[in-house]
View 1: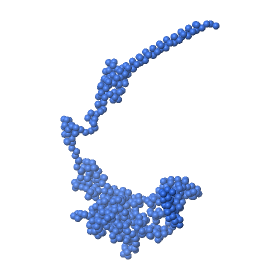
View 2: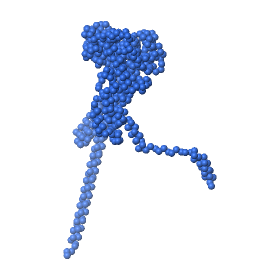
View 3: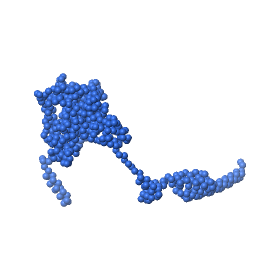
View 4: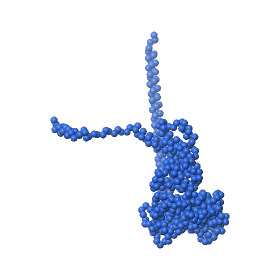
Length: 603
C-alpha cells in the first residue's frame, strides 16, 4: 500500500475511535423558516396592532385620541366618552373621562384614514376577521364617520393644566402608578371630583397644601458682583408630590365679594377670579374677564390694564402678577418664575413658588424674577454652586411691578401701534423712524392724542431717529475722472469679456459690410440672384467672419458652378454621340433584313 494512503487511513481510524456515540449527540438541523411561516408571523403582529383594546376586535372606522395617540373603534370611543360615570353622584363636580388605556385627558378625537386603509387591506387578505353584517349595522347606528364624539372646548382650555393630565404627566415618578394599582376606576373619578370641587373659585375653599421638598429649587448666582442686578436661573427637580387637605381655620371670616362684571362680554361675578382693570376708561370703572383678555380684547383706549383678583380670605383686592396655573392663581409679586417657551396671548407663563416646588409647572427651564436679592437668597437661589445638568440663565432680576406688564411680556401686553402712528404724524416722518423709550411703556401707552404725544416728545420719551445719509460726492468725483480716461486700466476693468464692446454690436457691423458687398456683386453681375439669396442667409447666420471669407466663398461657388456646367455639357455631347451610333446601327440592321427578304424565292 502507498505509505501516504496508509497514514491517512490510520488518522481516520484514530479520529472515529475518539468519537463516543453515547457522548456525541449532534442536534438536528433547525429548518429555515419558509415564506409561509414569515407571512403568518407578520399577519399575527399586524392583527395585534389593528385590534381595538375595548371590543378586542379588528378596528371599525378607527379614530385617534389627541394627545396620547391611542386608537379605538369609532363606536367604542363614542360609547366610552358619552356614557356617564356609574358612581357619580348628583351633587358632585362633573368629571370628564380620559383615555381608556393611559387615563390621559383627551383634547380632541380625530378619524384615522391611514389606519382605516391598513385595516381594510388586512381584512381583504384575512376575510375571517371581518365583522358580521348585523354587527356592522348595529355599529353604524352608534357611530358613522363624521360624527362628533366629544364637544369642542373653549380656546383657553387647550392650555389649562387639569388635575388628570398633571397626574398622568407625573406618572413616571411612581406614586401615580401605585395609586392606580390600589384603587379602581370609580375611586379614581371620585378622587378627581374631590380635588376639582375643593379648588373651585366661586365657593369657600379648604386650605390645600403640597409637600415641598427642601432641595427642589436650585440656582446659580451671577458673576457680576459690582452690579445691583443679579443673574438668576432655576431648575426644578421633579419629586413625588402628595396632596393633603385640611379644614379651614376656625377664625376664617366669609367676606362678600365685590360685584365686578365684564364690560366686554357681560360676564358677571368675576371679582374672585383673575380679571383686568383699566383705571382710565369710564372713570376708573372698566373691567374685563380673563377669557376676553386672552382673545386679544382690550379697553377702548388701548391702555395698559392691571390684573386683579379679590382675595376672599383677607378681603383685599390684590393687584399685580398671578400664577398661571389653572388650579392656583395666587398672587406672586414678591417672586415668580417665568417660562420663555410656554406663551399665551397675555405673555409668558408665570408660576408661583408653590407650583414650582410641587411640580405643577411646565417641564421647561424657568427663570426667576424678583424685586430684591434678599428674596432670592431666602428662596435658596444663588447659594448653590453650578451643577452639571442644571440650567442657568443670564437674565437680570426685574422688580415685580404692581401691573401685569413685566419685562418678559412687555411688548406682548402693550399695543403701541396707535402711539407710533400719532408720533409719525406729529414729527413728520415714517413709523420706522419713531423710537419709544422701553422703560416708559406704561406712560406712553396712556397717550391717545397728538397733544400728549407732543408732551412726550418734549420730555424725550419719543425720539425721531436721525436720517441715514448716503453721500454721492465720491461717486461723482470718480465718474468725472473716468470721463477723462483715468482709472480705466486693466486692473480697473469690471464686467464680462465683451462688456466694453458687445458681441452684438460687432456682429451687426460685420453683417452690414457683408450685405453691402453682396449688393455690389449682384449689381455688377458677378453673382446671380440665386447665389445672392443663398449668401445672404449664410452671412446672417454668422458663417463668414470677414469680407475676405465671403469673397473666397463666392469664387469657390462660381468655380463649382462652372465645373458643373462643363460636366453637363460633356454629358450632353456623350449622350448625343451614343444616340447617333445607336441610330446608325439600327439602320444597318434594317438594311440586312431587307436584303434577306429580297433574296428569298417565292413559293
